[in-house]
Length: 202
Ligand code: ATP
Image (tube, rainbow, N blue to C red; front, side, top):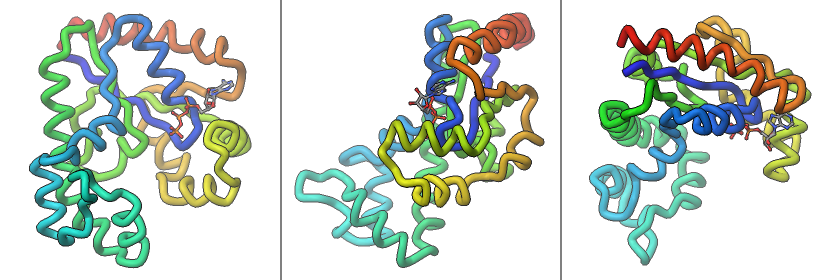
């Protein structure tokens, strides 16, 4: 199965692009969805999180108390590594399972942090990397319109992500999304054709 990794900075247009591929009957694996799935109630990863941090990370209804954990990580930076050491292998295993079960011509793994994580990262599951790129001005404008976040909040997220240069260096293809959505979709058509042809080798 050919796996195309689709990534880009905050507000770059990953979701819009992946929705377009989904309409072409391509299976989309969304890592943000998997990240929530692996810490579901009674999941092994959630149990490991309790062992690492304590019972306070669980709400009365058995769900992960995301807000409390987020606040704890904010003041204990090492805790993020501990959390990632638990969740990343689980996310990776789930992604692998979905890839193995996919029956479409190829599949797309969408992840904001696809290129982070080095040798154990999600990039290793992909044979092609597609980066959706838009300039900083558009990133801030679009992300703030969508989420009602402030420029400072979006800038802080951007500072935590890979720089544009580091991201673009790792791409097999870059689609620039500075125009209309129709222009974005038009750029995806030849890529889809390319992936369909390439997929025959896998
Ligand atoms: P995030 O990583 O923050 O989830 P994303 O990369 O998935 O973002 P999208 O959700 O696809 O980005 O796009 C961000 C916002 O910008 C959305 O509201 C989307 O509809 C809008 N948008 C994306 N591309 C365009 C475009 N070319 N023209 C107008 N609006 C756009």
